[in-house]
Image (cartoon, rainbow, N blue to C red; front, side, top):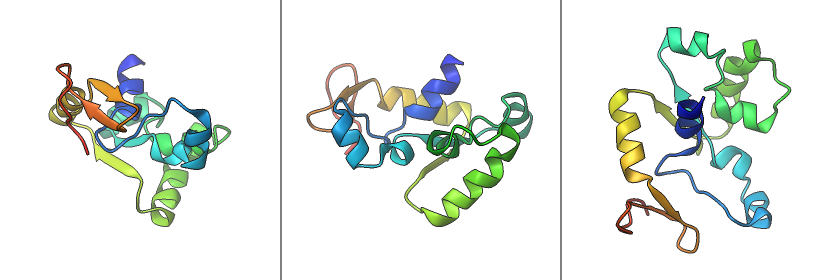
Length: 117
Protein backbone atom coordinates (compact mmCIF):
# COMPACT_ATOMS: atom_id res chain seq x y z
CA UNK A 1 0.00 0.00 0.00
CA UNK A 2 2.91 2.38 0.54
CA UNK A 3 3.65 2.26 -3.17
CA UNK A 4 0.02 3.02 -4.01
CA UNK A 5 -0.16 5.97 -1.59
CA UNK A 6 3.08 7.38 -2.93
CA UNK A 7 1.92 7.05 -6.55
CA UNK A 8 -1.48 8.60 -5.76
CA UNK A 9 -0.18 11.68 -3.93
CA UNK A 10 3.29 12.40 -5.28
CA UNK A 11 3.64 13.99 -8.72
CA UNK A 12 5.32 17.17 -10.00
CA UNK A 13 1.88 18.63 -10.82
CA UNK A 14 0.35 17.83 -7.42
CA UNK A 15 0.63 20.44 -4.67
CA UNK A 16 0.85 19.63 -0.99
CA UNK A 17 -0.56 21.85 1.75
CA UNK A 18 0.40 22.58 5.33
CA UNK A 19 -2.58 24.85 5.95
CA UNK A 20 -6.01 23.21 6.02
CA UNK A 21 -7.79 26.48 5.12
CA UNK A 22 -5.68 26.81 1.99
CA UNK A 23 -6.20 23.12 1.18
CA UNK A 24 -9.98 23.59 1.38
CA UNK A 25 -9.96 26.88 -0.55
CA UNK A 26 -8.04 25.34 -3.43
CA UNK A 27 -10.25 22.26 -3.74
CA UNK A 28 -7.35 19.99 -2.98
CA UNK A 29 -9.58 16.92 -2.80
CA UNK A 30 -9.37 16.86 -6.59
CA UNK A 31 -6.07 18.70 -7.21
CA UNK A 32 -3.87 16.85 -4.72
CA UNK A 33 -4.37 13.35 -6.05
CA UNK A 34 -3.36 11.48 -9.17
CA UNK A 35 -5.46 9.12 -11.25
CA UNK A 36 -2.83 6.47 -11.80
CA UNK A 37 -3.73 4.35 -14.80
CA UNK A 38 -2.37 1.00 -13.69
CA UNK A 39 -1.96 -1.99 -15.98
CA UNK A 40 -5.26 -3.91 -16.21
CA UNK A 41 -4.41 -6.91 -14.01
CA UNK A 42 -2.82 -4.69 -11.35
CA UNK A 43 -5.80 -2.34 -11.42
CA UNK A 44 -8.11 -5.33 -10.89
CA UNK A 45 -5.99 -6.72 -8.04
CA UNK A 46 -5.99 -3.33 -6.34
CA UNK A 47 -9.80 -3.14 -6.66
CA UNK A 48 -9.51 -0.08 -8.91
CA UNK A 49 -8.36 2.08 -6.01
CA UNK A 50 -5.96 3.87 -8.37
CA UNK A 51 -9.06 5.70 -9.68
CA UNK A 52 -8.08 7.85 -6.77
CA UNK A 53 -9.52 11.28 -7.49
CA UNK A 54 -13.07 9.92 -7.53
CA UNK A 55 -12.33 8.05 -4.30
CA UNK A 56 -11.11 11.26 -2.64
CA UNK A 57 -14.17 13.22 -3.66
CA UNK A 58 -16.58 10.55 -2.43
CA UNK A 59 -15.23 7.68 -0.34
CA UNK A 60 -18.65 6.02 -0.38
CA UNK A 61 -18.40 5.12 -4.08
CA UNK A 62 -18.18 1.33 -4.24
CA UNK A 63 -14.89 0.06 -5.67
CA UNK A 64 -16.70 -1.54 -8.62
CA UNK A 65 -18.08 1.89 -9.60
CA UNK A 66 -14.85 3.89 -9.26
CA UNK A 67 -13.87 3.57 -12.95
CA UNK A 68 -17.19 5.05 -14.13
CA UNK A 69 -17.04 7.80 -11.50
CA UNK A 70 -13.45 8.66 -12.44
CA UNK A 71 -14.33 8.78 -16.15
CA UNK A 72 -17.22 11.16 -15.47
CA UNK A 73 -15.02 13.32 -13.27
CA UNK A 74 -12.35 13.58 -15.98
CA UNK A 75 -14.98 14.58 -18.56
CA UNK A 76 -16.09 17.41 -16.27
CA UNK A 77 -12.69 18.60 -15.02
CA UNK A 78 -9.82 18.74 -17.49
CA UNK A 79 -7.28 19.94 -14.90
CA UNK A 80 -7.04 16.62 -13.04
CA UNK A 81 -3.67 14.89 -12.96
CA UNK A 82 -3.84 11.60 -14.86
CA UNK A 83 -0.79 9.46 -15.53
CA UNK A 84 -0.29 6.01 -16.98
CA UNK A 85 1.86 4.08 -14.52
CA UNK A 86 5.11 2.60 -15.76
CA UNK A 87 8.28 1.84 -13.83
CA UNK A 88 9.88 4.76 -15.69
CA UNK A 89 7.13 7.24 -14.74
CA UNK A 90 7.27 6.09 -11.12
CA UNK A 91 11.06 6.58 -10.90
CA UNK A 92 10.79 9.96 -12.67
CA UNK A 93 8.24 11.14 -10.11
CA UNK A 94 10.12 9.99 -7.03
CA UNK A 95 13.28 11.63 -8.34
CA UNK A 96 11.45 14.91 -8.94
CA UNK A 97 9.41 14.84 -5.73
CA UNK A 98 11.86 14.30 -2.91
CA UNK A 99 11.00 17.29 -0.70
CA UNK A 100 8.20 19.81 -0.80
CA UNK A 101 8.69 23.52 -0.12
CA UNK A 102 5.35 24.73 1.26
CA UNK A 103 6.36 28.41 1.15
CA UNK A 104 7.24 28.32 -2.56
CA UNK A 105 4.72 25.54 -3.31
CA UNK A 106 7.13 23.46 -5.35
CA UNK A 107 8.90 20.14 -5.32
CA UNK A 108 12.63 19.98 -4.64
CA UNK A 109 15.35 17.38 -4.86
CA UNK A 110 17.25 16.41 -1.70
CA UNK A 111 19.79 19.18 -2.40
CA UNK A 112 17.04 21.82 -2.33
CA UNK A 113 16.95 22.43 -6.08
CA UNK A 114 13.48 23.06 -7.54
CA UNK A 115 12.23 20.22 -9.73
CA UNK A 116 8.76 21.66 -10.42
CA UNK A 117 7.30 25.10 -11.01
